Picture 1 (tube, rainbow, N blue to C red):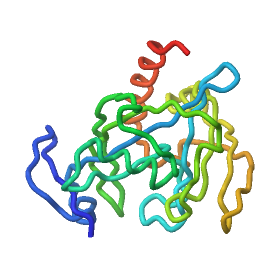
Picture 2 (picture 1 turned 120 degrees about the horizontal axis):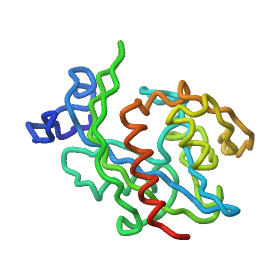
Picture 3 (picture 1 turned 135 degrees about the vertical axis):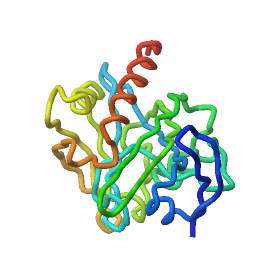
Picture 4 (picture 1 turned 120 degrees about the vertical axis):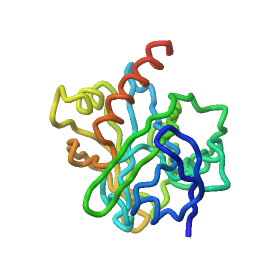
Length: 208
């Protein structure tokens, strides 16, 4: 069973707990988030993963490109493993751009998920070919213009369209899908607001 460091709400470590305990009792714990973006045809695109139907939490939801829990023996830099494990994307921690930490809560009848998310951006190259997604982790990967994604998460629009593929018995099935906030239960409103601010600031400073 995975063990996680647990914290007070003001980010002071108070011990270690099993992952299921953290989600049952609402213990604050750390996660690693990395958003992959890419400059395509004169605009930024952002990639989203389609979580595996086998996942206990949030199956078939669209989510951060690569994300995972930081275990009790790990530091923030160890989160880089998620890009390799989920996306088959070999990267170095120094290639990531730190966007800061976002604390947020997800509470419903099945989970109390209180997370300190260490958030990073990564500028990818090669389109969908840069990824070798792991079927046990993801059902697919999709992308859409970053501007459209930001309009969705800040409430300017209620739906957007994405392109990408699902992996079906090792075969890539390309299609287009609609995306709404109900497809992204992993991203509560507080996280979305903070993420929009952070990525807008980063790319405002980045001249491609």
